[in-house]
Image (cartoon, one colour):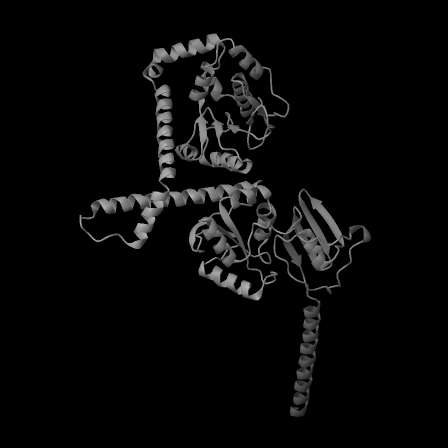
Length: 473
């Protein structure tokens, strides 16, 4: 019995050994046939290059599903969304593309020459020009957002021209397969670690010496329809934060100098350098002060016009309503009920009556009226309207208008919203040259028209929507 037990144990041990060897062989087979696991955001062409031509395809809206023997690949707008593969069936070799689908290998277009690749050259050029460095940290191998940034922002000629006029542009590529010199790659890696760069892409404003000053928030640049406009707006907001800190530092310095007793020790070299730089910029500061005083005066005048005693009096309001009705003008209550398209027609007709060339834009866009000069194609001013379907306008909508201004190179804009604006929207508009017009302001604009012009203006509005406007109401 012992002998039979020993033989049975030996047979079982041999069976286990054979089974383990078979599993190891299968593992080696699958290891040898393994395909690369692509990251979300890879293009459709990269998926086919890695896994071969699919055995089947299906579509649902903007989503495409590629079928393979080992599973499926889901694409959203030709970008990889999800992979569902299994190792149970044998992994066949990739199917070749059919003859009609063979494509020539296209290399991505090079970045504009304004994007430098080395920190030393960027420091030298920034010191010569006395400007800051705008540093872009990217990893095209592992970050789909870095690829999108290169395609939609870094190669956009308008963006590059706008930023290069004010900064030295520097792009630091941290991908392992980047075609840069080994010493440059190592320098880039150390520099990114020093600046604690962890997310890609990251955009930083740096001093001419390469020291960090301010981070540019590009976390949502890919969320909208215009990544370039979003990045330009984010850079502008970063500059405003820097300017605010510098003004606060200057005020604190002045207070310390006033509080210091007479005959005390002289200021530190850094303080002297700061005062000297402010002295060199005195004309800029004086110009900003004059513009600020002018803006305050204009706001005071508008406030006086809006809240004059005769406007607050009930009999004055009743007289205005009677006068508007007799002259064919809409009341403030009427304006609050108008949709966006009708407001756009009214604003365009009002500007045309003043002698401007106003073009009403198609419905659903980021602007409603474009004011252009009689000669030339570049717009002078953009106008956005918010009707009864929007209500009170928030700061988010005003920021979107500013992003459109920045992208199109326009310096001023109107936002017409009879329902009014939130305090945050008013504060943002004051800093970014955007004039806000509510129902009271729009009614005042109409009352300033000559009596003989009013029927012509209102006739254009009541005649119906212009071509391209589907939200007239």
